[in-house]
Image (cartoon, rainbow, N blue to C red):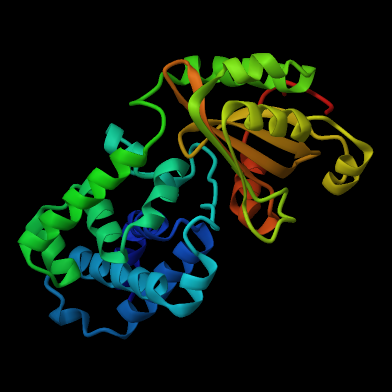
Length: 312
């Protein structure tokens, strides 16, 4: 392959990776899909490809759809038993992020909700909301009619809106203050304050520090408060599991505030918050090392600032 063809692919790699991440919810799988697309680009008769960007978009989208439809993926991503891979603010895979719809489409909340959509609905929704493709363009990418594209996007929007917790866009500084207060209550044992800071329909989901075979779920403010209080209570066993006494930072993860637990320069856990109307609407706890690999790499390059709690 000539250098011009390689340069052309590399110029669009970031956009393709962002598309694949939104479709798959996994940075590692997204990178694999983009690499597979590169191999197809390498083998293609590029002289006959009139619009390389459109061709590559279609290839990556269909590679992702194949993954979502595979028996292995259906088993691994059983609805309700899968959490997306979190990414630290500034990760290029989170782009584009100019509009609220683009930022929302990559939030952990919406990535989780999109698991309830069919693969084609998910693809149509992402192409429209995050990348502003027209329905005519989406129809060409997915090999469906323009009318079908409109229907898929409408259904996806309706389902996401119906199940979305929290409200619209939240001021980052205000959201951070809510999380700081919530963390202070969690680490001080003020369970009643935790209850007061949760919405009536709040939910909490966790992978049990990466040890649970199935996701742990909690509903009702009282149960969530008890779970959070127990989870944030330090014990020798937890410190042994973490490999030390973590420092607790607050950072943006997928556009939302999160508590990031760090031992030396290694992230050992993330609790991401969804905030709405001045309260916490949901929490997602992720501790599986494989799910934190890319975030860990970004953290080492990141200047995190002082932790909220220096030694948990």
